[in-house]
Length: 131
Image 1 (cartoon, rainbow, N blue to C red):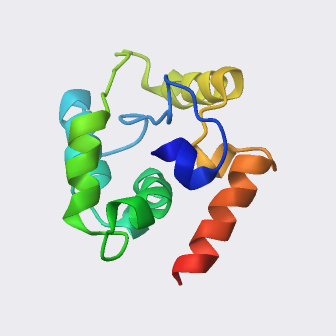
Image 2 (image 1 turned 180 degrees about the vertical axis):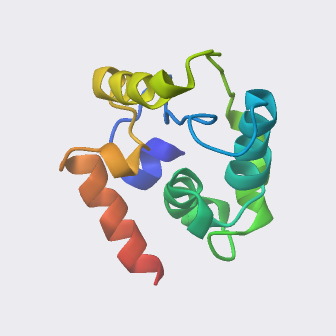
Image 3 (image 1 turned 180 degrees about the horizontal axis):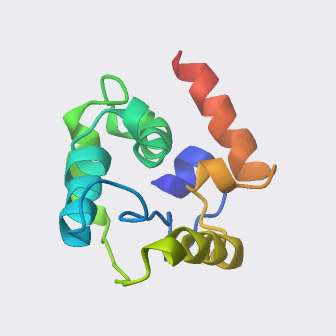
């Protein structure tokens, strides 16, 4: 579905790399990761998550979603995506590791870190089409 909507190849594997716990008021990184995934990414608003916004933009037409925050996007995410965590005790290094992983893997939905290219161009086209 991602390939058809983007009209670009999106292979199986890592779509997005994020981080949690690098900054914040809590020392409980598990709570922070749980909050990020469940509250922001999965059930949040697209304006709070560039990942959810990009995914919802791509899937809006094929899912016949009524906007970027339609629960049908959440349903699709729950059925098709998996979350993998990499626990770290050095909170200062979390951000640096995430950036390194993004640079190495170039996940297609890390919009803020994508180099100018076909995926970024196509996401822009899809965004303009739904406004």
